[in-house]
Length: 261
Image (cartoon, rainbow, N blue to C red):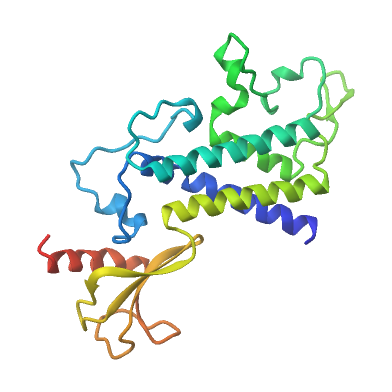
């Protein structure tokens, strides 16, 4: 695998982690969800008077108290993902981050944790900024950003903050990030899978329903009856009636009405 492909796959995985992190934070404070309805519809289907969980400006999971998390699996996954990404950032910084006088004031630099520091900001280093910051920082190293000499006010060229990432560390970054991405997606039920919809049948023909999820696509539901099912939705390439993203809310509402909810 060449360098460009490796970097592209690593960046894609980092962005998936960032995009789904808020969902994981919500999952930590929410009892484990059933297969149905799809997790992506949770906000759409939540009652208006339900408490809205704010996921903005939260401290990293490793810095919080967790007296009674509602979903231990989600908490364990979040802690594991943070450990992997923070540890990767430490490894890359040790290898490519230049050390020079005054460089500690450069906000682009990764600050290592110092458990013995009296100042809590120094004790946690850049980890205190959270997973989003760490993912963006690692992405910059993978893309070799800020690795060329920089012109100073006096016209001289200064040493850049970082050196280009060595090939072996690029592959290590890809491996680590892909593992973290996979665990996060599995915990949220967003990895590639097909799951029978439990205790519910197609409202039109009583056929078996299956929920299909994947990391990069919206969920969909298919009916096992095939094109003979009279449901007013398209047929997929395998001849099954399929409810895509735009049809799922209506399907969920129909199934709830059939159950008397």
